[in-house]
Length: 360
Ligand SMILES: [Zn+2]
Ligand SMILES: [Zn+2]
Ligand SMILES: [Zn+2]
Image (tube, rainbow, N blue to C red; front, side):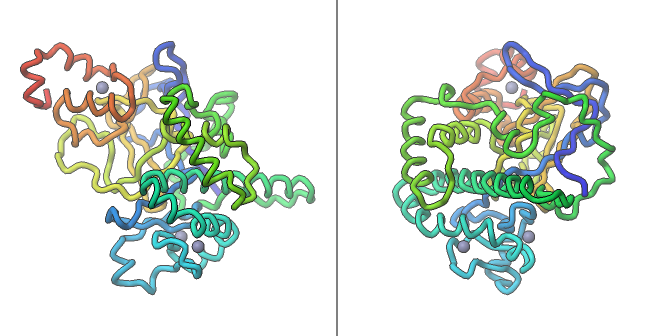
């Protein structure tokens, strides 16, 4: 069985004094080529109150997207938790539900004991963030348990990697992992999450204090047998805040922007630890799109030259046709001043033209 991530053999991780780690092409890559395919370490669905286009199968190794209408028109096609812990918890088929029993037992307990209180006291956004953290910690815990069991029993060749459904290997040549030894591209599982950029120094002391309180009250509160220290979990929250991806139906980062349609409505969020190495550009050379099972496909949006940095867009470029609004959005949401080629060229445009907010 092929496992994710798939990384194009001509990609490498480089370091720049101003931008930190970045992804670079070591030879020319043709437009349309698959450069990376990554599966989520964990994902959570959007809440039904936000009317997302899709629900997600709750089994993390499946994460199949299910049209939201199924919840109303074909309820028999969805498998729900017998404890009715949360309306968003559904499985695409009985097999997924039964395979997810052990993991969901932990999550179910946590959802029943905390979800109502977090949502009413802190709001849905905070709840979804903590739900994602809990999913990550449960995945880590189960993997560690399975690992320690595997060490004490004779090797039988059983893989503890999550099963990847319907994975098409035709586009993925054999991986030559030797070239990435010691770099982020060689890390897998929790190790790749922990190696991501992000710690409390990136955020205001008030924000960090708030995450400490949330972690103490709702994660390290004895409901689950997770033995991770509060400080470590706060570090994980910082990494999530800087590196998570939203789930949208359409393509992100097509440039030049040819359609005003955009990528569609949000239906979830998750952490893709290998893909999180891509930096942002407002004129990216890499696009990304999800398949039906939450896997993210990154393709060259144009021909990429040898030595060129490979960048994605962190948001829907179609939403910001004007440069002023776009740069302000980057500053507010990601707290950096973008210095991509497009932003540099925009700076040379006279202010009165920029104020018209045209895509120039
Ligand atoms: Zn499923
Ligand atoms: Zn449940
Ligand atoms: Zn830019």
